[in-house]
Length: 313
Length: 264
Image (cartoon, rainbow over all chains, first blue to last red):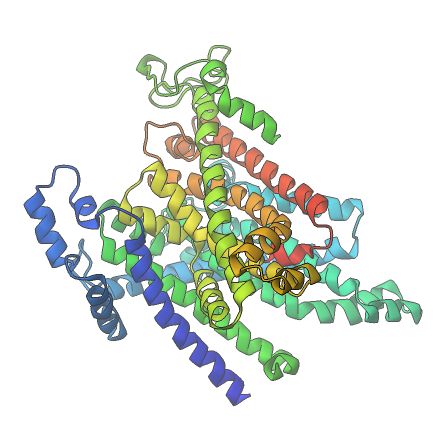
């Protein structure tokens, strides 16, 4: 077990170094000069040259890469142009509200999506299956920011059940929870649609296997087949579905934060983008990718604990 | 559904009742009427005309994203699956790592670093979604590679490039086309998200995301602006998802649906 966990952690470290490499090269892959873009249309060529020098963009690419990696491995991802603070610490100080929203959203999504996906598979080909899948198709087809606007219109403005914007007063957990509820529901329902589709596929695959046929041929009731045999065996692939949706949920969480004017990485990234704060955007992308890798590694380790066959593989 | 959208996109200059960028402040925020079926926005622009012209930009983004991600993803996935060894390990690790990035955020960062032009939006979304195509392509090539016709081509001395282009890729394409079709839906959502944040194709260009963003501040008094644009997006996304499902059933009935679904 220790060897399995050690292996996963080593793989995670390699992935984080690789993510740094990808962030570095991707930002330079698309044609165009970041210095010219940061300074805008009216910049003089001298100003562009100076900024290129200050950002180190006039050095050979390999030198830029080695300097960037050296600094990054010491926790330095550059300095934010807006605040003149280390980009990584600015991102970290805004990370918690985004994590809260993403975790609450994924929890709601799992609580709604998994039972509906399984129900749909258990009632395969019936009106229940069709209704759940149509609902899920609708859920993945409307943009999450639009669902957020509609939710504000109905639940905050018309029914007044929830506050529409902000994150609540600091030091008042009840107010913070009330402000988190609607954004988390919006994020949760959009991700739930996705989880329901994937859970249905996972459950259908289990239902098609020989041991289910054997269980049925033994004369077990449909309820016993579903609960004792199918559900148990479908749980591991269904858990993996949650891992798959994490990256997606983080992307959507940013849009939801902006619609609900919540503090967090979404508003930080938007501010950074408007101010053309390129190091800050780069640091935010890196931190979110690492968060996804951390969560997925945790899920991998959990699989190893749940299912010994996985850690022996 | 998609055919209708295509006709709207091509026929926008003739179908749209007004210019999508013509402002008329004396009629700003007008409710739906015979003259303006979906009302007007804060600048008095006809919302229906903006949605009709927006179809063109959304489908253009979807088309180019599919083309670029299909081309790059097919090449990367086919090389990984066919050559195996260190080439496979390197390319597959790269793809898996790319999947750790929230696709939308990656596209956002690329556009933020390089500017909000239509080309950059397309390239950014395509780069974000290429690894999904590549991973599906690789898994299919792994099943095609050991087949007898590939071995026969080897035996008669065909080059690797020829075998890849003439035998492996054509026989692996159907499932990849399915994934690429569904990624058109994701591209439309991605472009709308970027436009909503003001990072997509810049106003006053009529995109669906821009229309939702324009209507955001008037969601209580004039909800039809944002609502109608969201419905337009959903119709096109549902259209591409249904097309993907249809192609999957037609082109490759053996493909386990969840294999592709997990990667979308």
